[in-house]
Length: 350
Ligand SMILES: *[C@@H]1O[C@H](CO)[C@@H](O)[C@H](O)[C@H]1NC(C)=O
Ligand SMILES: *[C@@H]1O[C@H](CO)[C@@H](O)[C@H](O)[C@H]1NC(C)=O
Ligand SMILES: *[C@@H]1O[C@H](CO)[C@@H](O)[C@H](O)[C@H]1NC(C)=O
Ligand SMILES: *[C@@H]1O[C@H](CO)[C@@H](O)[C@H](O)[C@H]1NC(C)=O
Ligand SMILES: *[C@@H]1O[C@H](CO)[C@@H](O)[C@H](O)[C@H]1NC(C)=O
Picture 1 (tube, rainbow, N blue to C red):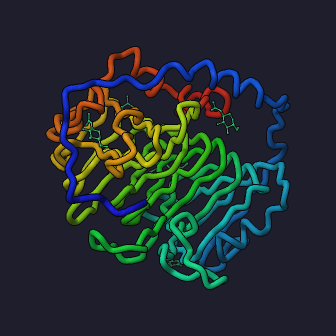
Picture 2 (cartoon, protein in one colour):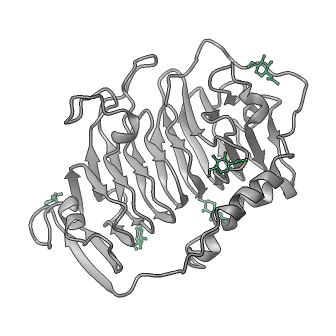
């Protein structure tokens, strides 16, 4: 999101402050009041459509395939996207649930576009970061497999403004990504809102390249930095202690260029946990950043590590307010229950 405050490096101090626990009951009360009696209605029926850029499918573009799906869709729709580079912007509206994008392989099927935050939209206004994504999904129950998403706008130099350029934005609930690639520089993956599960994915970027207020698990993913002077992996935007959002990285590998913050407190109650993750020698001193050094986010953010390893792992414990968790504390961040996965992920999907 914002530019890195590269002049102020966080210094550690001796106090270890736990997150406030006294709000737990207020949160429970609130969620009880907001409880709705949803009846689960799953998709009925199944449809397959193919996209082929050379004309041997049902559609030439991915958006044309999405447009063919009716509003209020109740079918499972498998969109088979043949190998090729599809240069287009794709939007799936909230009314079109149950869509799966199936590519021919992470290196073979690519959807790419090149919007930047400072570019002008049709209304003459600047697009702003959240609208730059090459693929934007507002719908629930979206799945993507074996496909890559790119934003090909040139990478900014540190301090340049308006160059945020997302490759993908997920704003729908219960989204599943398997074997997907996400390529960009600043703000590559907008993990905006909802419960998401990313498995065996490759995510590349420079500054805050996974950001937003999603409640997401990243399992067996490679997080690859292409930062030129300073970079950061995750900026999580949890705003209140009642929100169940956060980013849980499990068994991931962190590679590329640094120095790199592994997490930044975008929201006041930002939550980021890395467990069983390998860190190459790319981590910045301190490891974590409190975003603006003024809102006391170092007292309210929840940043943790559990059994991480590699030459950069020591630096990830570089500030007193990012903790080495014990098993009990780390456990909720290592199981698919973090995203209520038992209710919507298949047993072999997690
Ligand atoms: C309860 O929920 C409302 C809206 O859903 C929110 O504005 C408010 O901050 C919540 N209260 C607490 C204590 O989180
Ligand atoms: C069209 O076919 C060629 C050769 O088979 C392939 O290289 C290219 O990626 C295809 N283009 C699209 C957009 O599918
Ligand atoms: C996805 O790609 C991997 C290799 O890249 C392959 O092993 C796997 O079968 C593919 N899965 C599907 C569902 O196409
Ligand atoms: C951890 O990730 C590696 C790939 O990076 C994979 O080979 C291994 O099976 C994963 N372990 C578990 C327990 O999922
Ligand atoms: C937390 O940040 C404040 C500035 O917002 C700073 O004065 C303080 O030393 C920091 N505390 C720790 C534990 O790093």
